[in-house]
Length: 77
Image 1 (spheres, helix red, strand yellow):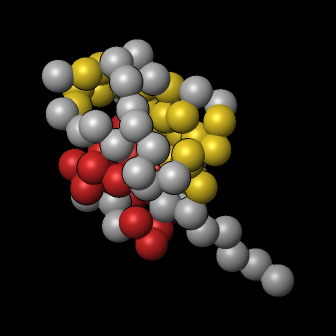
Image 2 (spheres, one colour):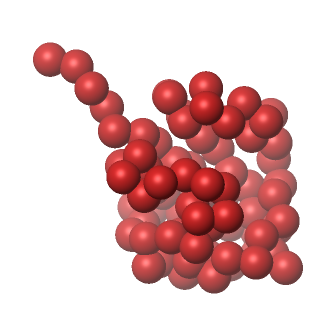
């Protein structure tokens, strides 16, 4: 098990308020995509993901202690 810090933004934070104040979360995930699956966040809703301040893809590896930020699709016009 790894412990990672997860920050959700925008509509994702509203849909999962239990993560709004969480710092470290235990996970078995080895990639960003697996972590999204564990969190029940559809990949289509996670538009931008950063791991340790670097843009990540769904197949990007995650390690113990990583800082992960997940942003939703932005709307507007």
